[in-house]
Each structure stands twice: as structure tokens, then as C-alpha cells.
Image (cartoon, rainbow, N blue to C red; front, side, top):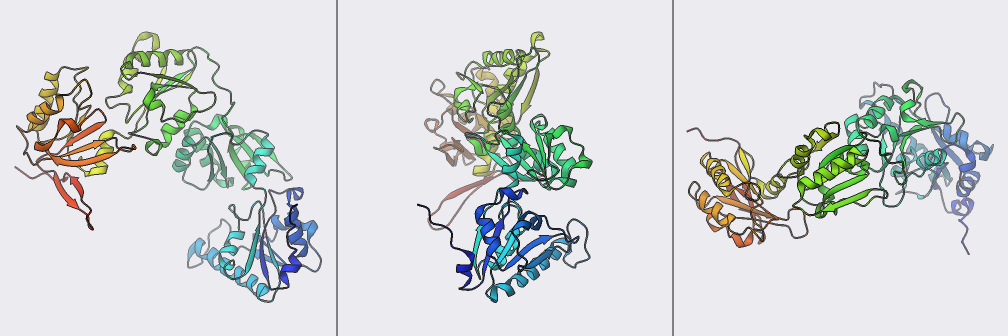
Length: 513
């Protein structure tokens, strides 16, 4: 059997008590029983309002106010207009909050129970929280939760907001447009609040992130004058502050119909390891695709989404994988080709573009989205060894003869470039590292620092720095990247209490001859 809440009058006999009362999104019928109880039994009812004196919070709770209630209207000195306050807009509000809290403290000190009304939920973008932060450590306090505008908007749209493993992002429309764009591109579902004058920028962010077609609009949910519709159809001049933009759940959303020529291929880089290395643009492309194509190891880094097909394959069939992805796009699918690191660095972008250059795929849209490269990741772990000019060379002789690799190593070493060496060795290629080391020793000091970075970002990450003369091929495999310093690269050991961490960097200034 549930225990009923203690009545306000019973508590207030022991002194004043502060309540933050959530009123819900606007319809008085959506107030909770606890909210009604607290309002009905409180001594003081406080509510925020603009300078015109009208309070939406008071209007929601009006039916439950008593004639003998002491009312404390907390009138903002400014809303969106400018102010001559010495501290500017923020200073004017801070001074207002301090004075408002002091007024409520006088009632609490006198033993009165104070209920501060808040639209929605008191702790969700609410004005009450400013009172809470100033008073809750001095007085007994209870927060009565309320239905948020987010929940109300989803209910009025009649569509799931977030389902299964999807991620919901709540964003204020006051964010810079570029920041909104990045966050909308990266998330599954979203609600953007505080529209009004921010609406043009918000709409622009939806369009730039490729999400405008999915976006819905809700105005004054559950209140008089409620309006819903597609965000793309809304006149910016008609949008009030009390409105939200919604990206609903993608689960069971309509996927492309398969019309010939309506698809596209996006080649994305997932970075060196897991989700921490994904860019917002890549996250958005992966979420929007209805088919993923890639090397199985890289596909496993991408979360499984309902309704999204996954086509994994071996690492040595790049051309076949590219052709398969383009054929899917030609049948109307939105395809994401998943690559590790950056897709344009010894990875899938070249293979896709090579096949896409054939006449039969001329009408298929192909985009390449960058990713964090293995070289940049390894360099960051070691310090800044790529701080000056450097060359990137693959030691794999599977697609080019070793003679070409040796010529390029010699040329780069002769030019005193730092070297980022990809694909140094594998089970079937065991001699290239020793050959490269011996070749480089003809042009570099034996003491040249070499960073051995293995599985950076992964569970077995290891980053060590050794002398060029001490590079051991047995310690290098396909998951290792080597960074070989130039004549100017510096290597020091830092750390205290027994710690020994190597820091490697290449100065930006090169000495004159």
C-alpha cells in the first residue's frame, strides 16, 4: 500500500518550507495531484511574469488559488530587451534573482509555506531553479515535478519521440546555428526549444544538417491556440517563444522506396577506434543510411539500428565492396560505406570513386566525409611529432612494388621529412619494417625518435618511443603505425613519482642552412 504525501499544513508547523511546483505544459488538467495539494495548502504563492504583469504560471493554477493566499509576483526587469544595468543583461537578472529570493526568504523565516509556480517542470529550463539554488540549502524544500513541454509536444504529434536504443537530444534554439547543425546531424531524435526569434537560425540548422524533411513543429502544446505541422512549412514570422521543433523517432520511419537513381553513397571515416572518434557529420550520415557496407571489423563499430541493412565483407575486396554499394544506391538506397580512420587515406574513398567513375554509375551521388586519421591520432598521443612538414607512406607492397616504396622512403628521408608509415607489417609481410629501418638509417641518426603506436583508442592501446636503431620488427604488426622523426624532432621524458612518459615534438621553425 502506498504512503500518502505529508500535507503541507503538517510540515509548515515546524517552520517555513519551500516548494517548486511544476504545473505541466499549460492545460490545467495536466497538473499532478501533488501540485494541486501543495498549491491549495500553501500560505504564499509566487510566480514569475514579464513587466506586463501577466503570468502564464498563475493562469494555469488559477482555479486552485484561495482569496487568502499571499501572492508574490516576481516581475522580471528585462526579458529580451537591452538594459542600462552596469552588469548588462546577465547582471540585471542576477540582481533580480537575489532580490526575489530575499523576498521569499522573509516569508520562510516567518514560518510560511511558499509555493513557487513553474510551467512545465521546475528543474527543466525553469525559472524556479534560480530560487532553488539560492534557498534550498537554508530551508526545507520539495520539488514537485511536472509534465514537460517535450513530453507534451510528442503527445500532441502522436508519434514516438524516442525508442529502443535511440538517443534524445534537448537543445536550446539560442545556440549558434553551426552548433545546432552539428548536434542535429549527430543525434537520433531531438527537441529544440526556445524558438520565437531564433526560428530562422533553427530552421537553417535543420536544413544544413539534412534533417528538415523529418522535422515537426508544435506551438503552445495543450494550450489555447495550439498548432502543429511540418517545420518546413512554418512561417518564421508566426512563431512564438512557446514552441518547439521536434525530430521524432527514426524507428519504423519510411525508408527510401527504391526508385532507380534516387539513392546516394556516402563514404565515411570512423576514426581509429570507437564512437569517441566519430564526427557529428559522420554520425548523422550513419544514422540516415538505410544500408551500411564495409569491412566487418569497421561495421562492428557502428550501432545496430532497426530497419538498417548491414553488408559486411573481408578486408581485401575493396573494389567489389564499392561496386556493391553503388548498385544499392542505383536501386534507390542511401548507402554509407564505412571505413576506418579517414576514408581518403589508404582507405575506401579511392575504391568507391574509382568504380563510380564508370559510365554506368555517372548519375549516382557520391560524397566523402572525413575522419580522424591514424597518423593524427598517434601523433596526438605522442605529443606533436607532425608539427612540421611530413610525408605519409604505406609500407604495404600488395598494391605497389617494394621498389617504389623504397624510392619514396629515400626521397622523403633525404628531404628530412617526418614520416608517418602506415601498414608496416602483417602475418604475410614480415620483412618490410627491417628494410625500411635500414634504409632510413642511411639518412637519419640512430638516435632519431620513432613512435610505435598500436591500437590507438582501442582496448590494447600501446604508444612507445624508441630510437630508430632500436626498432624491432617483431613488435610491429598491421595495427601499428610508425612515426619517424626528422633531424629536428625532439624527444624528452617527463613525469614525476616514478612516471616515465615520452613527449615527442617537431618544432615549427626549421633552422636556416
